[in-house]
Image 1: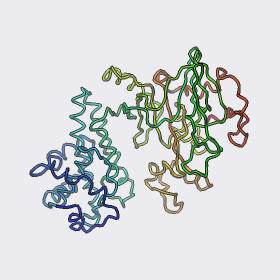
Image 2: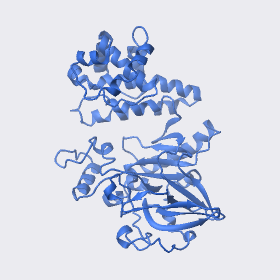
Image 3: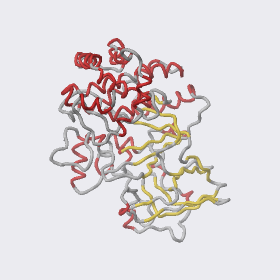
Image 4: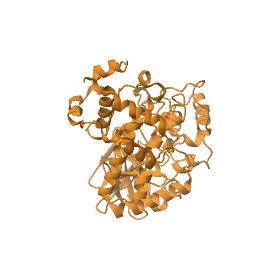
Length: 444
């Protein structure tokens, strides 16, 4: 049974079939005789309950599961999606059938069943690692988060999982990736925070320097569009010192060049260092208390279960670290209070990066059509309607500083006397950063 034959059977066309047809032969060879376990009623029903779903959509899921089992084409397609997501080295499903013509309003349940198929794999993975059952249970709630687009009405209130989201679910089945309270933590090399951080040996104060040749815009941000580039940072290391452009804790790159003597400053974080990549699952309730509790859990959990791993920091990338947040939200809002706990670092970003997670829409905002159902949606659309662009950024919170979570540790100490004076060619224009030194930033 070929990929094209299945598309013909479900009356669907794909403009690009390369990804859909990729590894088809390998998937066929791995397919078990009979019905795969993840499509057996006993397994998906148990997984649905374990992931925290109620019975609201159980009857619909049963209809789709039976339809798949009776239809050889759907059975082959479901297996390929499952195998690609969880068993192959190519987890991303980029261009796949939606099944909207064939299954109608139940189409999202096809990939929902594939998503549930990862639950037994996560549970087995955690048992091998000796992870407590309560943490496994909490981690497996992620599929409910991935179902939110359907809850939120993007698909006319249909329920299910959008197939591109399956890749994210695959990480939980084989990576050291766990939900600890409100936040999730993934023990992996730092892939998201594109800067170097240095700690003063005596005072413990921390400063970030931009990587060499980072393309900054005039306001100290990094845009993906080449036309926005106004200047490039420089970084070099000598036998005696580290020299580079300062990134303020507010996530702004400056032309302020400092020389950090090695006998006074040590390099404590750079790309590829082992870190805790932090994910903020959708679902609200990002309260200071809940987030602080998650950080405390991480400080206990990882030394206990991964004693040979020594992560350097929490790192993350999200619209939640966008340095425009204080222009949009009140200073006492959960999102602004959350951002203030980290050292923000600009990240290459298109003009609308991060909006999908807020509106479940992609591309430039449609001010007439995009939802205004929540306070964040209304505030952000009003902000964008004034001509602003949106963006993502990254952050870090050093392992040694995680105990200070809740104190705005980096922002409360800025600026640092330990950084010394400016070099001869480092002073930015006032129009570039809001001040002649790049130091007087609104810290709300």
